[in-house]
Length: 319
Ligand code: GDP
Image 1: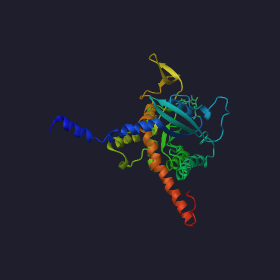
Image 2: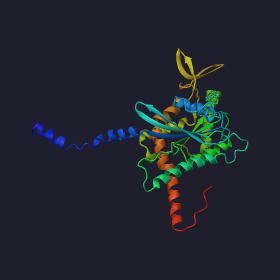
Image 3: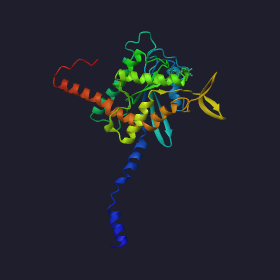
């Protein structure tokens, strides 16, 4: 057969669906991404500072204020702050939910309730929108994709309250624990503290993100998750100030004994956390929220609705 004829057959047998990745990319880029993070931890542990360091801008003020003249919030009033960050044409809509004051009281009994309720309320509102007959094509997603849980850098062990709260939260959201202000521990203390925390998590059967369900991940992703599990909890240092190291301005903290470069991997694990959140696991955190946490909530609610419609009394709410 003449070469031209072969070429023609080839050309006509070309269906063209291999452009789908470009089509998906175009659609996703146009729409942008929604990423919702909740921060939990005692006042003064550096929550606002770390968030601002990760996303490289002044997103929230210390004490959870958006404006300097706003009064300081004393209670565990939960507040979401929205931002749009654009990098190379990719739009990230970021919701940061601050929970000031968690664990600050002498009696912390039930202090996690408003946080768990907030997370469930977002699931509930998403479900309501999903069930609306003429629902929007695109539902505004306020479901929390990641909970950054701040651990006090005591160097000893988790506080009993932290164990309870991490357990409660891990049932409804992807929990990522961080050791705050890691510059207050020596490298040796930090290593021991991390090991102790990991052992406590195992002992209390607290299953944190990334989960161990190998079916959902290919080999490369599974290996990456394994490495992440070896690092967690991330020992981090945050700073909104630049310091000069070797003539270059870097994010860092200067104290009497020297300078900590936040972005230096031999100083702390900030870079690992930032890469994990924004580069390697952003999409998976969003997917896991929809497929695991929201799905569990949704099926429970739908079963409840079905029972109610059938006239069966609803079971008492789960504790
Ligand atoms: P939040 O109440 O948890 O939001 O804490 P802030 O972000 O307001 O931080 C409280 C104080 O701790 C501020 O003076 C920060 O400069 C300081 N701080 C924040 N991160 C760190 C850190 O990693 N190491 C040290 N040593 N201090 C920090």
